[in-house]
Length: 256
Image (tube, rainbow, N blue to C red; front, side, top):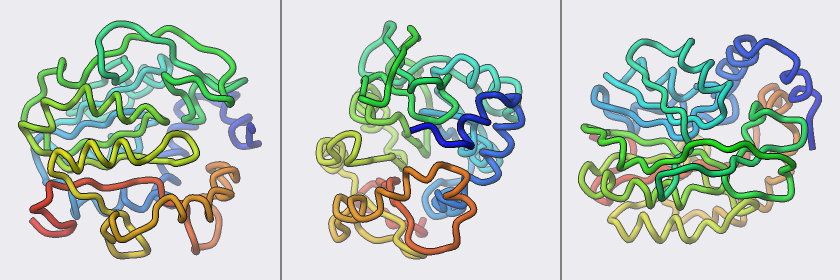
């Protein structure tokens, strides 16, 4: 369902929407304010699914280099024009192969709502052809942190980055939502590679294997349908958790 804010955003200049989105984003994704817990300073950070760049901007202030992967054409152009000089934008979708793919978008949306995906769901009404690539094909070095938010296509994106994960062992923050795709395959892939999952429950990091993410999301899914603006201005309280931090098993959040 299109919210009033989303409908208005489609008619406003991209730079206005981008500035507003980056300003309110930490209100409902507080992991963004906890970068020092899991993202070492310096090196390269990778933002897979850049959207309007709330993560890329923060990462550019902390890391030496940022690579942002964004397939929506007008969002990629906006990021190229607005991100700091140490950020590079790759106009493509992350996948487990190189080539082209159909990027599916909701009705009346150009990608501004953040619901675009390579996998068609019932919310999608139209598509455009975009380049797709594996993260491994980018040949990145000294990658210390990877954020993945690709609306259900996290598993192919991670499979396409398997070489990087095995060699460089970065921290990862992965969006996982049971309402879109089963969570278990991604968790199994990463735990099989020696990672352990964590979620930010309140102000503390809780081990994923001690936190029932599926039950939590079932209880709080109604919050998702309020839209970005309503969620941002809502009073503090229960939030919908969909970001899972994965660290090599010998690391703990907040400790070097």
